[in-house]
Image 1: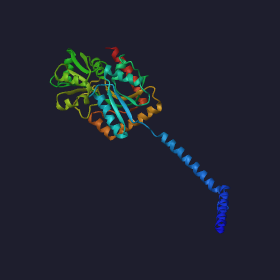
Image 2 (image 1 turned 60 degrees about the vertical axis):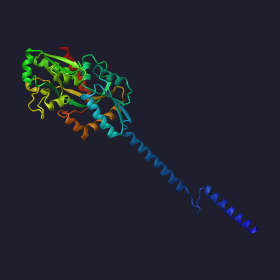
Image 3 (image 1 turned 30 degrees about the vertical axis):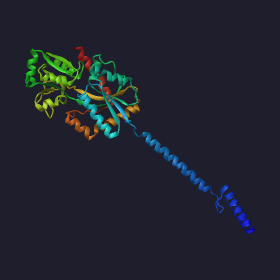
Image 4 (image 1 turned 90 degrees about the vertical axis):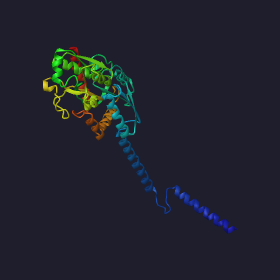
Length: 351
């Protein structure tokens, strides 16, 4: 019994000594453990630096688009601007795993959409999809939202304007031209101060024709009135009447372009007649003017990825949107819009 007690005391004393040595920073061999401590410190510092670098890299990566977005469309359903927005919607949702709500606001030539964009959150979650109607209505004094209240992010389309008629009335432009010199013709289009209206006024002025413009709220109404014979023709893009053109119910007779189109080589252009009329209908994306420049750049980069995609280019080709380069970045687009406002103001003053 005494031996067991003595043996236990010896073991206990040995453990105390070992623990005491450990607290003094020595290893079992009596060596100093500073090297081990320094190594741990260096590893910790290295991990911290790596973490800082990783955080910096992640900060540079774009976080756009967010999980949800809203597209405000300054036009009615079914038209060119609506089709454009919904095409981008599906591509962006698939590419970036985000959810997008499309809201059509055609009231007052889309002025409501621009007002909501200008007054909305400047965080890039609301995008305004608009056509040249935004600029023509601004030039006409009918759009209360100026270019100082919104920021253009990118232009996607530079669509070509076309005079389209019912072939039962006119077989070609020469026939239309001869009739309109001495008789009033009625031409339809969307909205009173739209690119369609500007095309009507510019051709009327350049060619000296007796042309009256009749505005409609939607492209579908324009087409139905041509088919019924209520109006003589319409101004619009080829894509806006593509189905009717392919079926032969409508025909383009004059194209606002520098050169004849490959798909319509027999249709004359305004340049063929010596008229400097080539402006069409542009479509682009806008955000609130208060949106930070960094965020605008992020959105522009994201939209450029969509624009350059094979899927979008196929869409553009299918809808005759590839005759002209569509893309303009934020700064170039802003300059183009400012020039167009002055151009259309001058045209409207002569009406």
